[in-house]
Length: 122
Image 1: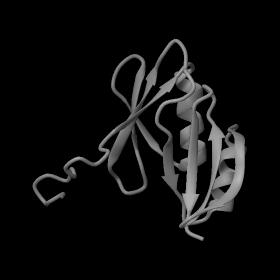
Image 2: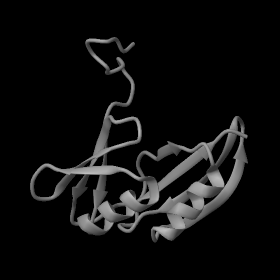
Image 3: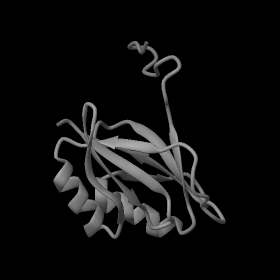
Image 4: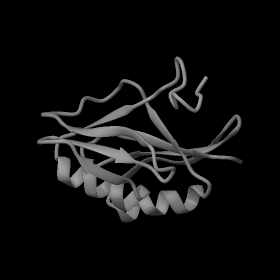
């Protein structure tokens, strides 16, 4: 549980690092698609801050992005608009919007080939 002295929640995801083969292209993609603000923390790394004003993770320069692993899923209040923002920012839709128990979502590939998803309420 989070509290006023410590905003972090025990055993909850706290910070997600996104690997990027082209750091600047990925940084621009996430700015354009989701409005994230980025803070440079030195060569090869940006922290990203979301609309709530909190830093939720970072984008890290890597040599290659390997498929698989955990799927990062973002939330949207307007799924169709988010899909269009991803496309307009240069993302590739890997799974168009589909229904699942509790909502709808789509998957996309970022400029480095990392797959993420966005979900919304039904």
